Length: 219
Image (cartoon, rainbow, N blue to C red; front, side, top):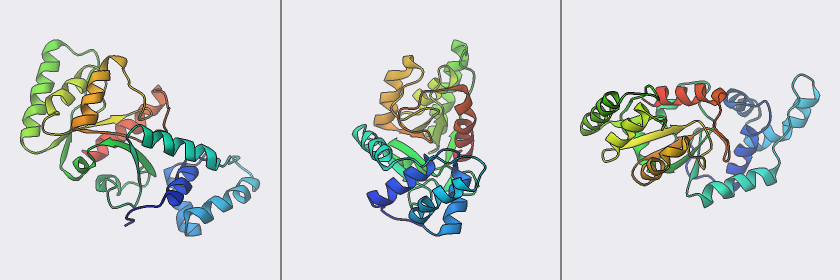
């Protein structure tokens, strides 16, 4: 397992996963083939020239800017293989190569239970979800949800004191939906925000499947 990571290694990994048409599985294949992230980056132009999808290497300046913005926001990066990377994600071939996290990372070391549900939930359903989250938290489980309106928001509220993780389908800097801005801040202070998406990414329907997969895998 990787311990503390130097900025040069972080930037190399960020450049690799931000390269066009390269996802988590391809990143792992490249690491196995070339041994280091730096060597994998060096091989990108040759691989692109061979045909198929053109691989546009992420510029160093772009990665440096993203890392700076992440740190300015109070967040940090977790890389696949680091000691504090969520162990629950490791068995999956497509586990995120890099995660952005903000809050109490130690919550990733505890048992977890997911509560998700309808955005247009009734008042009674939201109350029930909040009550269930409180009771689950009292049994020392972290409650994981997606910070959406309705059931998700109620679950986070019920578990703020005991521990809650919000998985985002957007960048760590984006608050969605806007009406959950106060809840976003409370989860930052008392829980943990986590996302696979680059800084500045706006929420979009195509991003929710991977977001749902992280929720399921962590719980």
